[in-house]
Length: 189
Image 1 (cartoon, rainbow, N blue to C red):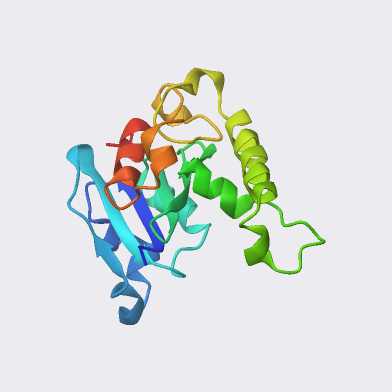
Image 2 (image 1 turned 60 degrees about the vertical axis):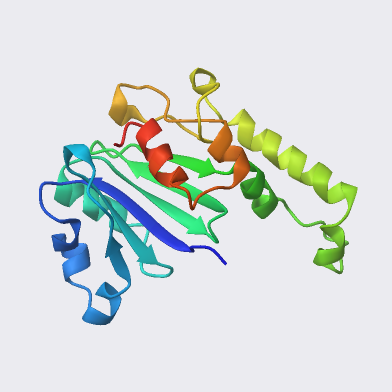
């Protein structure tokens, strides 16, 4: 089983763990937060165990740092939804590993009694193909050929598309640094 939890990417001259949203948690929760090696330009990554991160924490973190930030909600190291927030309040989202995201998001038919049996059918593969096409349709035209699935563009980096399609989006390799690579391709070192 792989990593499930949140990876938080933010830029600050001070350690992210000093942010009020982290410093106000009890010691038992702080034990579930792990800092990664800082990156150039003051970018930092925190790894949080599942269940700690709340959606409104991203706004609080951007407000505290005064810089854009993003968080990846990873599931079993095989799929992640990355949500970014600019200081002007604009949000963007990107799915990492679109094939697994499509399988996760596909709607179950009402007439299926046993989901595990349906998942072994050509109809399931067809439903995944349709969901993948929906996810692909959300990709901005100027993101074609980029690296990670994105459903919006990242205005914090000159209006350039954050990343879209390619290796990390298709292989499911979140363990090998795909989240860090995706953040880098979105302009977050």
